Image (cartoon, rainbow, N blue to C red; front, side, top):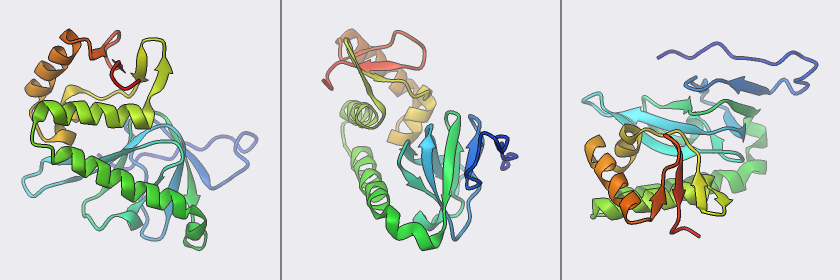
Length: 192
């Protein structure tokens, strides 16, 4: 996958030349001396191990800060899961984003803690709760997690097989803990 061409809005719609728009599955270009602040959309950060297996490092949304300076991993990529708008933060402005940078560290640690949970059922449920806390919208049925993640992508994050995720999601649905009215959305009932 290569870094896609940057989609820039016409100047009448984009007075801030530091903002850039990307499409779903685009890679956000990384620079050693720049951070990006997410204005809209959702991205994931990832790397690969020596066997070539992809490792998801985190999911980030509005207000989060991402970029190469926050990781020492190589390779390291930021992939858009939805259409995304980001704003460039040059090094001289990083101190103004300290809360966002600290939040990035805290969220990464939360996710790492979830991945270390021994019970795979609990690991999945904790990950769904993490997604609901970060990206959930309150509905009359519960918290709507409207993030397009496949069972394989969920499996990648929590370190189990896709088949196990599918089986456990069906089990959670039978127990009434989640609802899945559409293919990629989940309503987490227990999170209210």
